[in-house]
Length: 412
Ligand code: NIG
Ligand code: FE
Image (cartoon, rainbow, N blue to C red):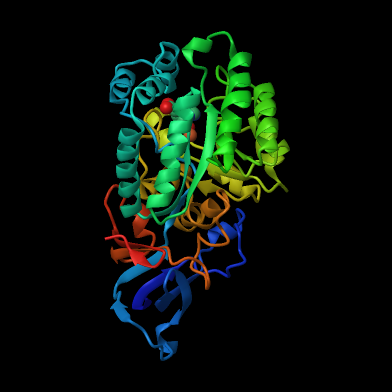
């Protein structure tokens, strides 16, 4: 299909296809074309320009987007979208005074989700997860990463990763899979963390690799969960199977997780709510993308990632939802972009760069996604009639999206 979109109020995030990520200073700019046209052929962006320069093109359909803005679809590089059931009771417990840590220590938290997941069939898990995926696609997400980590048993972890594989097969957006067997210590392994890690490395990891179920490896590197030594050990093992790290670090404490990620050539280090000046400095000159998850900060009432300090150090920054049942039960990237502006003092330009091109980089997709570029995939959002792109984060909580195209097809 050859589709021509005309009279676009503003075409946002227009870049050369060779741009893979943008650093802190460049993030202030969001390249755009006012009063634009966009031409797509099948699943790819073919060409675009100013309305006054519209050439004659043979098309199957012309679509008038007067008053509407077009931007690349969101890339969500950090989710745990495949989970079973929900944890709204823990949410109420926290309102009534318990902390996230206290809930986890009583066997709630990740272990609670793992128990439910292990009791849920693969079919049911797929059904719940597919409905979440459909919801976030309608909210503008056009590429997504999904982690395991709510199984914590060989069967459970493989069940999640097989569900992710099925989602990949059945939905036409890119889905990247991350093995997060080291998410928490299951109660059967209480005080036997080394044995659990050995089981993850010797039993689960080879099975994951054999079925080719993951691209990345992750670990929750945090006090009370997994240490730097554990992180080194797991990431070293993952490397043997070609799994690049994308890891959970610095959510509650700075214990050297950022540096461990860098040492193991992590594609991204995620969370970063607690960052020392040394943590920020250590990322300079590396290829590792820092990723902030403001939905988690909102939901758990914990600090927000110091975005300004990170960007002012010249580093790039990406944004993701962390969609999961415990610390961020929302996969809405629009809300994440709003929170970045409202709570992290990112400008709309910075937040949109962080949620598109830099987020694409954080899952190895910036060659094909994350910007409006000739030859990239035709994955984009069409807004309702709105006055400017700043209206997107400004109008937090309302839905300014009219349509979403993935691989050149409307999802509506
Ligand atoms: O990214 N921090 C570790 N894991 C998840 C939350 C896990 C949960 O509470 O279920 C996160 O926030
Ligand atoms: Fe997470």
